[in-house]
Image (cartoon, rainbow, N blue to C red; front, side, top):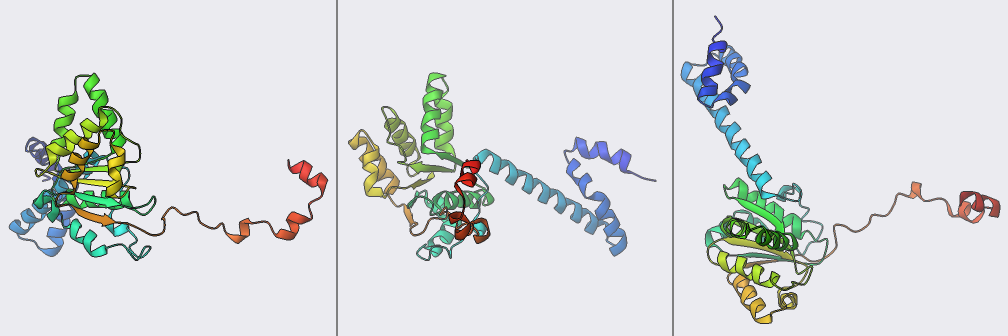
Length: 267
């Protein structure tokens, strides 16, 4: 007698329908390997725990709003020998989040700042933390739009309560009007309460130039720098154009021997 028709609605009622994905395979394994009842039960429960863990991870990654799926395993540490690999791997442990301090990643365009930021965000999610990835421009634009739609308090609460807020490309555009106040308010509220990761093409002494209100800027930067870990990425750009294959480049002699008629026809 097959108990599955009766078992399926019971598993759904208990919100254990994920067990259905593996129960038949586990049943065959139990018969072949002569599992005890307790071994079989342990196996399907472990499958359900793994499934739920994977589902939570996927959901957390979606909520984080990463630009793309970048991990430390994919990062080429050998490309720029000056990168402090030991520091980055230490940050991957997420102990800085227990300290409730910031991480600042600076360096020229193309040196891997966004990759490192998102990879550390993935590490934080795997460690059980909630993460949100945004650019400075997007965050400030969303705050401005939320204020106009009476949703500012809700968005501000989310930005300031998330375990790890990653703000990419700070200083890419100078702040305007109330933007410096909004940025200061987010950083100030998170100070010594939550960890914030900021990436920038500018080194920290240049950040003051991004704020129209220098006093407000000094107060914001002081909070970000206090106890922060600083990662400096320097050297070649990962985005450097590659040399085209020789086979795609016409031979020089062919270029010189084109007749005027052929050139005109090509045009």
